[in-house]
Image (cartoon, rainbow, N blue to C red):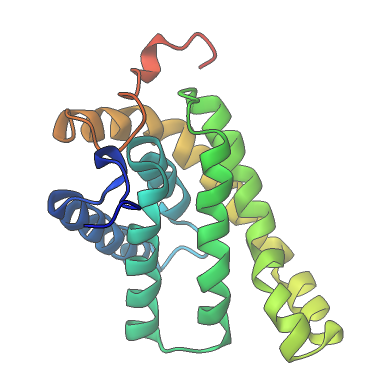
Length: 189
């Protein structure tokens, strides 16, 4: 082992790898289950919870999810956008990682839902040109609004119950700097 090895708290354990792989598959399964409802999914909420409990290790779950999307639905231009869009959501969630307020996370998820479409079309700017990217963005505005509203409501309703499920099944340190606090103790909710 080299002297540049990460401290024990930063290494990915086999248990964490298994849990994060299952969470990545779960993100995919929930999106697939809700596929009949346009732009209604639990992706952002589940990534938020992974960030709260696993920090940057969440990227393992995100890339499992993205790979499953490509394997099932094909590796098209939208898929390549997922390679930067979902890690960007993870990075933004890391900025608020210490937060335990369902309302703050719901606002965060709503904003992500609103801007996810435009983030996806950044790649289209370079591949298809600004006219196509702009047309796709404008055509997608109603779906972005649905994505915003559904992300907000689902996160507001499900953050606390799912947080408790995570806390119940992941009671020991999961890679977080400190054990996440109970969201019911936060007066901001």
